[in-house]
Image (cartoon, rainbow, N blue to C red):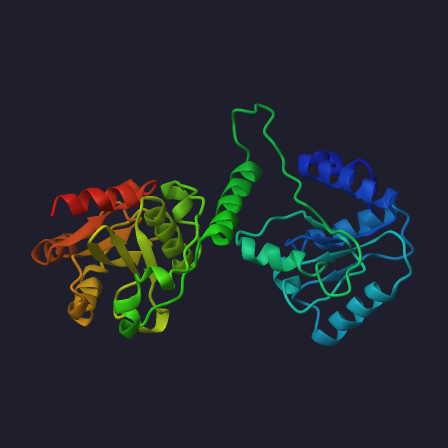
Length: 330
């Protein structure tokens, strides 16, 4: 038993806000899904919730330790309950897929997950066929007492917001095979639309996750600078990740993401190889675009020998402008 189920949350600004939200949900007599990653905190929070809201039993917990049969039993029990206030605690990774929990129309992300796609999948547990009520999504965020100092929660929320906006706003055009290249820039086949570009910092680029997310960021930056951009097929790109066109110039681009402040030791040979594959289309330039601050001496030598444009991490906020400037120098 928790000695003080009301006083314990006061040790955390995020918990204070969390319980304010939950108190309102209780007044509306609705159910909530609480996503929390810490396996140690899940049972403690479950006990606090039981005592604070006088629940008849401990709230159910779904995490990676719960087997499939037991997990389904928990889901059925939660779904079949009569109307009224209740909560379920879920680990984001364990609850991201495969659950239908439309008995709840409130989702609270008490602990954030670094990948916004995982959070969106968690939200989808309530946004399912059969949901009859509006779904409310809550993300309690702690702020530093001095507003000019960003808290961890604020920084993380900003990163996730940018990542989610990038994923939702990016045009994501049709992928190309080399055989499609000749018709790739036919306006009648265009699949682009206007996008909003969200510049990021170098440190943020290290946490974008997969290389594909970084490719999407580069593509959106080029697009915002007036380039027509196409992504190539991941399994058949021959060393070329993006094909960019501006005016009469066609540029084959290899995109490389590093996850820390280190020199890049690959990439130039890949885009040189791609040039041979796409030679019949007469590309005007080859480019290696990376968030690395520098590349190794051997890579730089190879780039100079083969006229490969290098765009480094110091241009992270405006890759499109940097590529345009390099093109003008050819």
